[in-house]
Image (cartoon, rainbow, N blue to C red; front, side, top):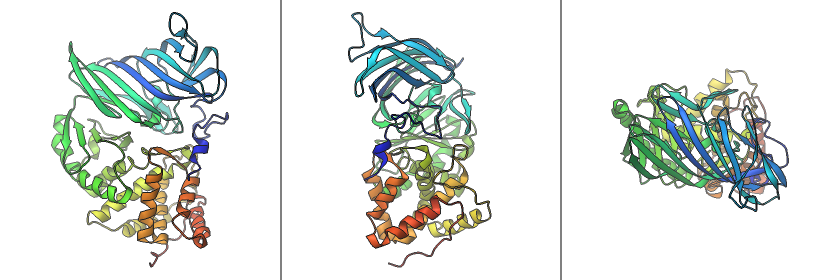
Length: 460
């Protein structure tokens, strides 16, 4: 069993995540978001209402949410005896920077459920922080939302930490000339008076950073090659090149299913925006690529594999704390090597040796099991994380490693994960006399800056 449930609602004891101490809520969690967004693409104007179904984590009359820049026009509370004879009651509102503080008309007890309704409006924009610009980004013709790790507050009020997860219903009103993609499954599209009304739902709880909205002059098509429905959303001028880029994605999905277990969501969507991006990024059951990341060479194909693998590692298995980011990026990076091997390319060992040579020439100053706030997404976290996974493969042997990997995914599907929980899971796949050896292996790769040697494969 993983230790992650102990930290499920980080902040409930008053201690915030040191990686993101400026976000989150210590008093309550949100269990469902119902968002209604009316968006004007031409002027980037947003009028919205968020209905948050909440549960108190301790006795409190003060709820803190994350909401950046957008102006709150009304805030009310109901449920649990908090409403009045005339319906929901107004709550006190203080909004400074990215922190929205709501004062309830009376305290709620730990475990008590209540509903917050927040109306807000404005012109959403990106949030500039230690990791560059994140959140809502206005494109030349449309919108891109990249929420990781704390950018969701740029478009809706939330508890923006991965240890707080919720289900969603999102409706978007936008010009009929635009395609709208939201995390989750498309429930309906209705057109009226030159506008389309899109409704998406996600019944699997997810952290706010995986929530997204993508809007553009796109068209949607279905990709073949997998038992899981796959969709491509891009502009007409990108269609042919995008189809070639993602032509093998179905085979990737089938290969990863053999390695990691069943695809965790009902479908998978890739969006290609008409602008260049520094990196593609994953969302819930969706990934987003820039026009510069299309192609059939290994460099582009490894990115396709990486973002697809995140649907297992990061989206289904969710971090309890950002400190354990290697569990997301290390496994997704290793999946690139898995695909190379499965598709008849270079074996994982070849990639591991090449990566090890590259790291050996670099300064050894990063502990990937605790990389710190600024270096959370450092390339070393990705590459050394993949090498850690490969070291386990060679230590355990092929059969035990693949069983361990599938077991890890199955045991924590739609749940939280942590390094401590992974250590415990790893022990269940090895005899007790090897526990100290495997703990030492993880310590060397995760907790020390010096680069360990790449050992020879185990003989089984």
